[in-house]
Length: 181
Image 1 (cartoon, rainbow, N blue to C red):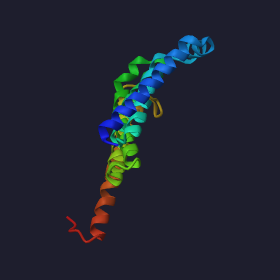
Image 2 (image 1 turned 90 degrees about the horizontal axis):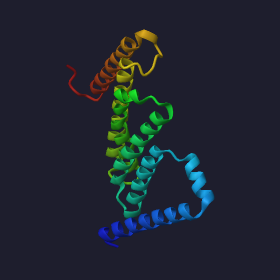
Image 3 (image 1 turned 45 degrees about the vertical axis):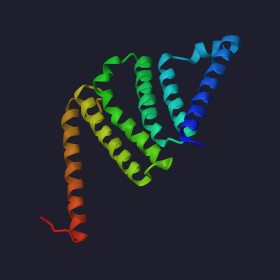
Image 4 (image 1 turned 60 degrees about the vertical axis):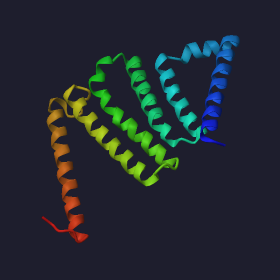
């Protein structure tokens, strides 16, 4: 089956499933009551992300997991903010988006697209995102693990991490026969 035919088939399946869902929801009152009780608007955004992942898997495009992870991740952030009412957390929550790209990249790698490279790059993106999240949330008051010294402690820990990885990298290079500077 050609790639365009698979894309058309995948999109058709998703449209039929969505249509069936809407018919069932409108004509089956218990389902409609259940949806109204448990459904909040950000959950729909997460569902769109899941749909993108499903579409990518149906048409054989592992790379679709990247936009799927971004959309689902942003939906998760919005769900958290909608549930807690903490909309000001966006000042540091946006730093999770590169991590969502990393998750999607790892999933694409696990689904067979450039496996080794995608997993390595995805994990790097997740680490960068976690570091950004820690720094920004410490500065904007997102967590008080270390009290008022939070930003200073985070910077010290990050500095120690950078020094440690640099020393490990230098040690490996000198053992592998690289010229040590």
